[in-house]
Image 1 (spheres, rainbow, N blue to C red):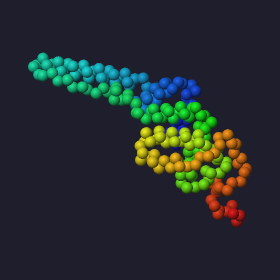
Image 2: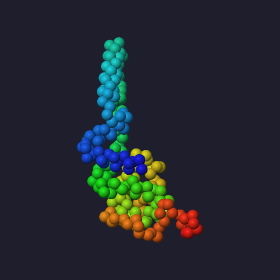
Image 3: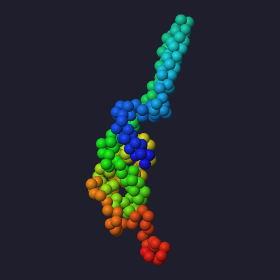
Image 4: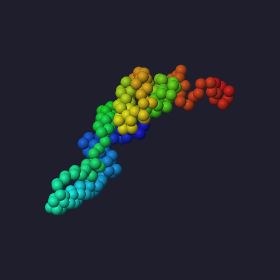
Length: 202
């Protein structure tokens, strides 16, 4: 749900900023912790320069004293901090897909909620006609792209319980307007089969 919410919000930001700017801000947020910071990386570049200066001076002093030259590569602090995680490509692909299909993306959080907390738990409320517009092949496709993104971010241990989404029959129509007054054979999320209304009526 967190990945879906973040993806939908970032898809909306593509209306105002190009993908390259969004990528740059995300990389900064995921590496140095602040999408708007302009100080940390330049400071690390100066630290790298200082380390190289001290290393060169020390190396030169040993050589002048008669020691054999030994060159030791010191990892760059800037490169170690600024390298973005590989999963950012999967995430941005997900964001672009959401941006390309705003009609489906607008209801995807509700689709995910019904999928995770109803369908995958064996309940039947998600099959009601009033929810059919949330369970189209397009909704399933975006959920599966989000699932792939989750696998790359958190690992298979986290995402494996959700892989049953592949087997769910999403057959609704995105163009159908649900009639919520129409009676359904399936109980809603707030109905328990066999329950009464408090007056003895089932």
